[in-house]
Length: 424
Image (cartoon, rainbow, N blue to C red):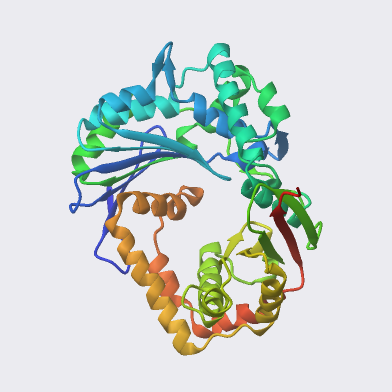
């Protein structure tokens, strides 16, 4: 087991590559009483199209989320949630665009808790009957989502921003695909993706690293190595232009809500590391539109705008910077945003202040087992490389680097969706 310092801190991560290919990361937090453990799979909703051995494979939308649901079945009339509940353990799971994560929070009975978590991830009980039972639950979940006006607003924006991007499809999938998913489909994708070489175990909390690793290795002996052919998300060519600039939809809301997003070509920004680019964009957004910015104060305090926020996302092809407004006078707010994005500014003093603020927040992350586990999953599992150099990377970013990126932000290419109260 390797012990490596998290550069820029006095914290350590313990790492081991198990015999079956599973990557294991441990972080000891003596200032808490519980432990957070997660098994992460590099397989999420965007993998409904993926590449394997230069072949493009198309599966069904929503299948990653469906598999997450049925994985808690451990046998006939045996559910992992019930097992965890009897142990006094909190359990849950989520499916994201690129990964599926199963996690628990426990205080004792480490072997029983971890062995049950391994069963969920590696040996789910998938039958035609439990698939049909779960199908009804997921269909009802999708129906509720489709009736949620904010859900409709978000995915209408995704479909207007992109022509081919996988983000056009919801995590839950289409109703048509959900209805046709079979046990055989789920077993196939489980065999294809739920391989130790494509998974990571992350444990953060009040643990003895050596004893916990010994427990893990004992459990892993029941899960031998399997052949794995690496698979990657298939990213179809995405045009630079948005598909549709303006749209209006209606829903059960009292106040109008708007999403305005600007789409940029990722290749236009000569920053290889997405985390470095994210850090730079974060500083620009915080300075110009963040909670302490003059612009936001004017909107929320002076103009009495009901709600305003700004965020961003980065994928292989795109950088998207988006604004969300909740106000019936949204046209005036949008006009001010469009003027402000053409006048972005950042002083050196502001750059230093925001950099310190972000680093300070990262230090406070070490107070939470869950946040640390999420950070490790996000930062360490890319290509299964043992890297946690965020602090050093951020230190290497200079003021002029941020100014250069800010000048490259050409806010011309946008999509805007307005969600208005239902017509009477």
